[in-house]
Image (cartoon, rainbow, N blue to C red; front, side):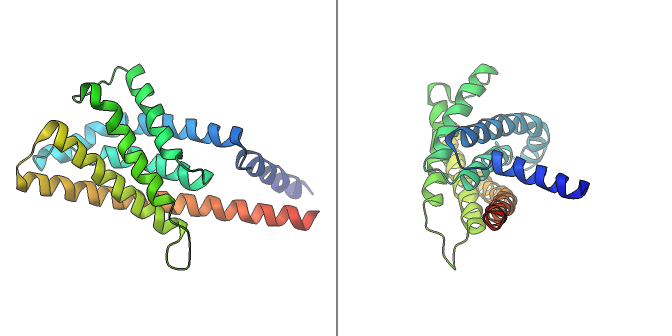
Length: 202
């Protein structure tokens, strides 16, 4: 009996948090925005060690930050979710004093990858492309777009370092995209199971 009550409480929590309402989706987006900015700052020292050894300016921590935008987009299913979160991250970064080397163009550095994520996530799901597949592609594409924008605006790398930089962005984007897809798919499956369970209970 106690176990059944625990299961019901967990189901109620999942249903409340992922009920698809605007309020719950905004909460999810804000939490993942903070998580993305926080993880990027936390991982930067390690990421810089790797990129310095390869003589490139970055490409790892950005993919990790973008992963949270992909997860939010996959969980909520809302159009232009990642773009809105990118702009929210600009505000958070400025509040933390992280203006960066892009100056006034910094908002575009956050917005462009968000738009790329949103465009990929607009692809209809079918037998060939699942939510996990879209998340995987979205993280890679957004990571590469962020790297290209940073190079055009700031770094102006020669061909060989640029290729290494883009490869690093692609690999880190692929790893983070796999994680984002696994998380999004798992939560989406759980939501569907809970909805089916509620339907049977009724």
